[in-house]
Length: 182
Image (cartoon, rainbow, N blue to C red; front, side, top):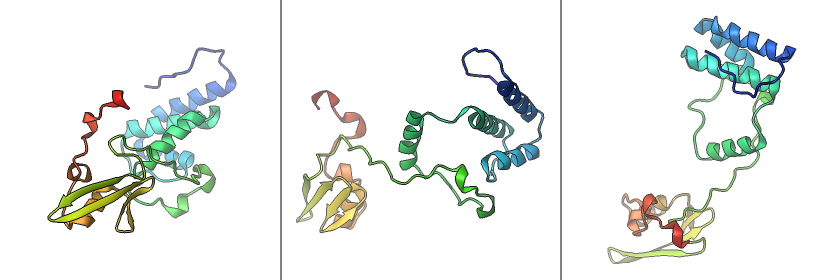
């Protein structure tokens, strides 16, 4: 059930202990795995999937003993986390261990969408007799002095309807961008 993904090397006491702990996980019930999860992560899990719990706990045991992710992997995880809602619900405040979690102090800037003109450019269109102009900015889109996070939000405010911002201005779909000319 457990497969080691490290290069072959001389076994030592630490590795034997890790293997013993992981072997013990294989004999635990779901209830015992959930308790072990609290011990190693410092918070409860909502999962009742035995295989998921086994893998997560085994990874955590190895990470605590041998070191966690590389700096490159941490940066990539941070990039992915910036684009996703990680938690569905807030953690239980009693189970939190503040030192067990990475402290993220700054968000990485999102890369510029290649379908858009560079920041500072204006997107313009006549719509129902009205000239709609939206400025592309590094931090979003500006319409009539207000900043919007997405082009769609700015277009919807400008038109009073529901539009896809890219479709409204006739910008290419994600697969239609010709990167060879850039």
